[in-house]
Image (cartoon, rainbow, N blue to C red; front, side):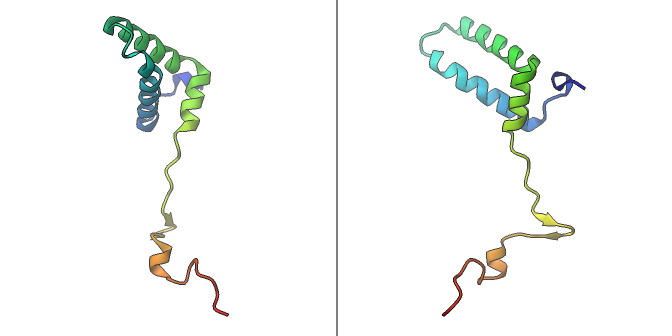
Length: 90
């Protein structure tokens, strides 16, 4: 399956919109609203349909860190064992 046919996840969609806003930011003060809308539309279409930016968006979204080991949540290990991260006494 080609990457451009796979729907974006919610995180990828949010990142895509964030990147579009960052790209358009320098033009907001000097570009008429109608032209900005056209620029946004073309940029979004290109980022959605070209395989290179789609792959970059996919890679830029960090995977969720699972905070469990089997059935037991790891949580804050320092709270569970205050000796973690301390130097041994001499």
